[in-house]
Length: 128
Image 1: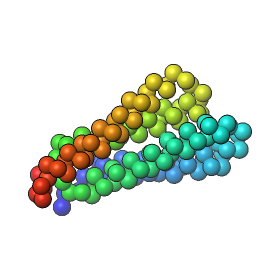
Image 2 (image 1 turned 60 degrees about the horizontal axis):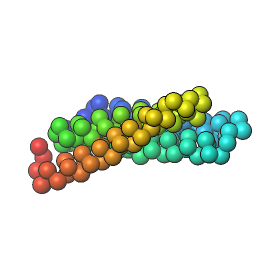
Image 3 (image 1 turned 120 degrees about the horizontal axis):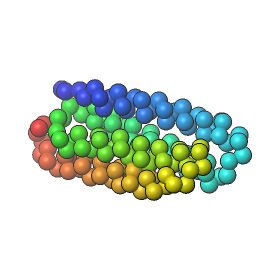
């Protein structure tokens, strides 16, 4: 079985930072008097980061070497940075201009899942 170290490393880093940001959102950010809407947006970003960190973990351990698998992982990373990162920036920095990046990050998440589906369909019971 082939292990993909880069996806495992990224998965662990994104999982670690999601845990840290989730703790900050629950304990530090909530205590600042932030609006419930902004706190909910922050928590959504943390949740999506966790989900996609776990997806990267699976890609790292799946043992399949494929350009489509690589595309899925890359799309997940770009989604975390674009979707989650822009929400974090908007909530923490009050920057509205980054809101244009959020949908692009969401599209990256969708692309990643579609690529993963495509890879599964292409496998047909064999490793590429």
